[in-house]
Image 1 (cartoon, rainbow, N blue to C red):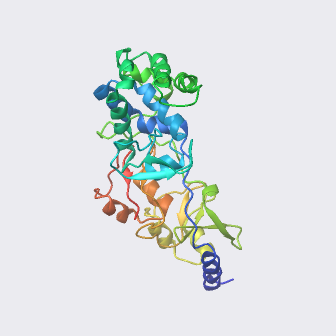
Image 2: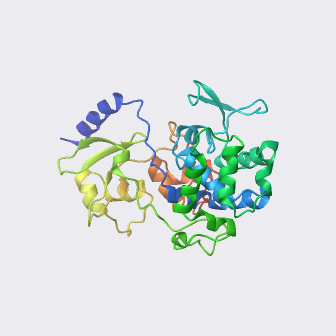
Image 3: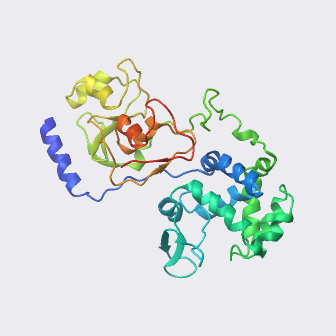
Length: 323
C-alpha cells in the first residue's frame, strides 16, 4: 500500500470520527498533591486553613482533579452557586438534578474561593479557633458546620490526610516520600522532576496497523507512532516512506537525539492549535514539550499562545492555552 493510499484510508477513518476528542490522562493522588501543595500552603498562610484539609478536600471533592466539575469548571471543592455568587456557573446533577455550581477561570481561583468561602462565613468561625495542626478537629468541624451531607465526611478526609502524610504540610514540611522530586535550583517556579515519561497509547485512537507491524495513531488530526526499542529516525522514515529529517523536525528534536521505547513520535507536522481541547493545568513533572506532544501542537506555537519565552517552563498549576 502506497503512502497516498494509506493517507486516503486514514482520511476515511477520520471522517467517521470527526467528533474524536483527545482523552486526557487521569491525575494520580500523588500528582495532585505535588501540583497543588504550594497553593494549599500559601492559602494556609493567608487564611489560616490547614493545608492538609485543603488538599484532602480537593482530592475527595474532585477525585484528584479528574471529576467533570474540576475538568470543565475548575471547581475542586464542589462549591455551589449560592445567592452571593455573581461569576460563571456550571450545571450538573448532584443531590438534585441540574444543580448550579461555581465555575472558575483557573484551579488557583478555585483554591482561593474555597479559602474565602470558609473564612468569611460565620458558620465556619469555630474552625478558626482550632490549632492549624488539628486536622481531625477541622475535619469533624466541617461536617458539623454543614459543609457536606455525607455522614462519613470527616473519616474520609482523615483517611486521605493520614494515608498521604498531608499533616506534614501543616508544619511546613514536605512528606519524605515526596522529597525525591527535587525542585530545579536554577528556577523560582515550583517545577519538580519528571514523574511522567511519555503519553500512553491507551489514551489515543488506533487507526491502522502498518505493513511493518507498526501501530499508527491519530491525535489532533495528526498521525503518530510510539517508538520501538533501539529505533532510529532513519528506520522510522524508511517504514513510512518519508525523510529522516521530517521525523526529528516534526517532533522538535535534534538529529543526534537517541530515541526511547514508547516515545511518542509524529510522522506529520503538528497543528498550530488543538481546537477541541480545554486549557491544560500543568501537573508535576510535565514540561511544555510534553504538552506539545500530548495535544499535537507545535511547541513554538504553544509558547506563543501562552506568551512564554521559548525554552522556558511554566509553574505547576499554570493553565496552558491550547487553542
